[in-house]
Image (cartoon, rainbow, N blue to C red; front, side):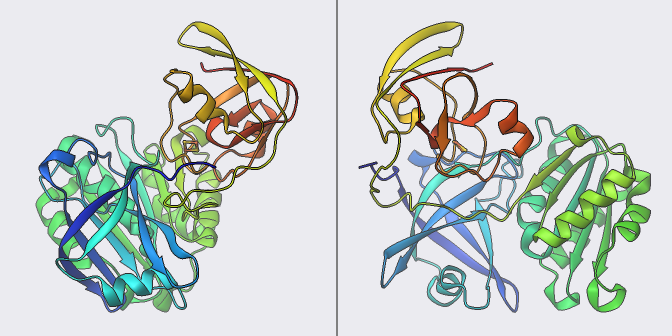
Length: 341
Ligand code: FES
């Protein structure tokens, strides 16, 4: 069995209605958990949602607050039609409610806040983008352009806050709204025309898949290098990290690990995830979500074969280059070798 992740009970200090179907939950993180819940702009929290049939389900919600403005950690949730978790939050959570939450995770975050940023958000994809925008304004010196697509003006989350930020930031911040009701669905040509002046900026994109595909196409038409484009998908978890799960798959194996310049040979029991083997042996490999969605645990396979139970982050080219997710890898051959570079 794989043990459930360490989770924390956190009180909701305030619920802010953002639009007819979106609300922000301001969290009162106790002082003794401030370190556990320190986060980078663009990261998410995983929330345990009660469920009649399954006991609970886990959902990831991006932090919309900035860790650099003195505001309390806040997640913003949009009610989805038929969505159990978002409707439970919208209907059941109030000031004083206590949520069970995992610490912040995710890699959709700038390495430095000092650059120029071209931010794209579609609908509730504004949530992590807002965190990056406020952080870059507060900590950085660069310019920021935001292209924010919505169905219509009633769907715009953070409209008044964006106006306030623009007024305070002057020409450091440009906000361009794209409303389907007025302009039709976004097109690569339309987005490329809007963003051509900012093609040298670092791009961050979050929204529904069709919107992200259009934006990526637009950036490719503008010859923006792939290394300058960062994408956040709406996250879905393969397993419930709040519940113990049955481990399956794999063969008994031995793993040779090269980490921090040292090589170790370790037994790898079948069905155990590679990351758990390394941690249990006292090594200190990098990881964050342990769910196959952030990429923090990526390492390179230099011998043998593994299977990844869940992978939402590595592209086919990454896998062809030998990259694997340690948190999702089980052994397929009796010997496996990996390296962290
Ligand atoms: Fe996030 Fe492995 S720790 S993908």
